Image (tube, rainbow, N blue to C red):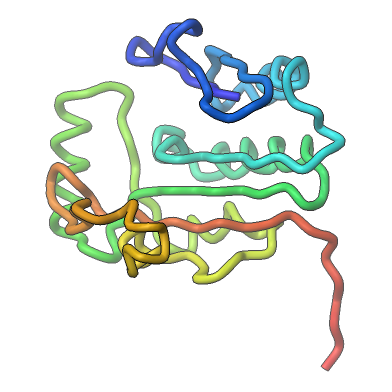
Length: 181
């Protein structure tokens, strides 16, 4: 399911998948989660685990509480065993390069974006079991190109005004179990 909003979003006929199964497209705003879940339910079976991939989108929801609420409403719609993947810019890892990149974006593009601290980003993941290696820089997610079958060879992960530092995290929604020590 591909959910996008704005003039750069591809038209539905251009969205396709090389994987077997159904593919869908929704033109929506992340903050309209009721609509997203309702329309996605036409394609996805919410009784089976799914992956929620919020890749470079939460930074466009400027209010952290509003962004967290959207993540939580999406998690409410999926069963245990589902995954949540997030990428989000931060100023903590290479602050000056990211400050410049975000200043440039906010002066020349719409909608504006925001960076969040690692603690704020981790708040989006408090309902999932964080998978290894945890909340890390994208460049540290799979640092050995051979781990991904060489797929990362030749990609620049150095932060710059054109490539700000991004944090990545993946979590799996499971049944929480309290363990007493």
